Length: 364
Ligand SMILES: Nc1nc2c(ncn2[C@@H]2O[C@H](COP(=O)(O)OP(=O)(O)OP(=O)(O)O)[C@@H](O)[C@H]2O)c(=O)[nH]1
Ligand SMILES: [Mg+2]
Ligand SMILES: [Zn+2]
Image 1 (tube, rainbow, N blue to C red):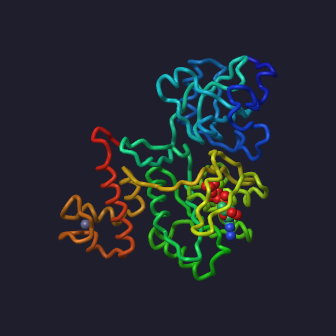
Image 2: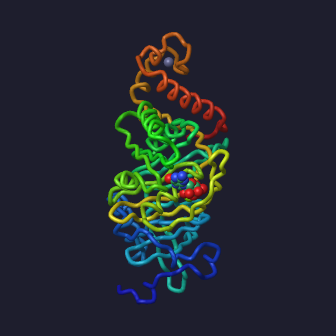
Image 3: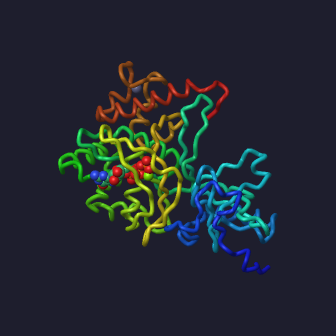
């Protein structure tokens, strides 16, 4: 079947149903179909759905979410979409940036109708901290989580980086670290921060030290996202995520905001989740900063970040050993560095406490 030219036209989303979200026509740096890789398993699932729905069913990727409204790219268009009734009725109408979906563009409809969300290769999800245990999917089908943290003149704590790494590894993604605002500290503080991270996460972890202000370290970040891969920036508001992306893109594609002088906290400048395509590299998802990252149910991720300690812990005399004072503790006797034991034990005990705080009928 040959489609009419009018149906191929790009919808700007300026009409009624999508009036509350930004128009797509002025956006730059949106990835095209060629920048995104669909997994064999997803292509096969699409083929089955297409056999059922007919030739009008197209494969699309969610490249942007504004207040829950997705924007999709297909092989030839960028448009807003809603969910087909059967998805909203089934309560299955949640997509994340990076999701592959099957979409139809019915005649007379200003955008698309999402008919199916295809299975994910990975989903970066974090617990909302509520007793019902719901998790929020930050991005789907992502290869790498880039943990972004600012260097501070008055000291640097890698705790949040370790916490983010646990989530990322549990969700099946690679982890890399970007330290921003290097212009604010001296070389010794930069080196100390990098070695502190490597002591906890191992020497193999990629750490880029950047200053968007001085234009330094930007190539190091680019090399973390080779062409054909997708990364998400994860970090607190004010860490400098959007500024970094602007530096990578070479123009002001993303809005950035002031931080509070007192504690460097941002004001949640970024409100949408969106993908940007880097020239000669992969795709990065910019997202609003996250205040807290409470952990629950990420034991597998913890074991991937600290494999040697997790293995030793299985030999502790008590199953709920806190590795602080118990007799027969194989972790304390295992020759690990006290800093690594402390980081491991703190996150393990937090997960136990959080799991205990969930409603008893919740299974994670
Ligand atoms: N000194 C210095 N300031 C920077 C650097 N990078 C970013 N900033 C400043 O940090 C502030 C916050 O930057 P944003 O890029 O908006 O931070 P964000 O992580 O995107 O924050 P949210 O969108 O709120 O999550 C801005 O005032 C930037 O100018 C840097 O390398 N050096
Ligand atoms: Mg931002
Ligand atoms: Zn122990």
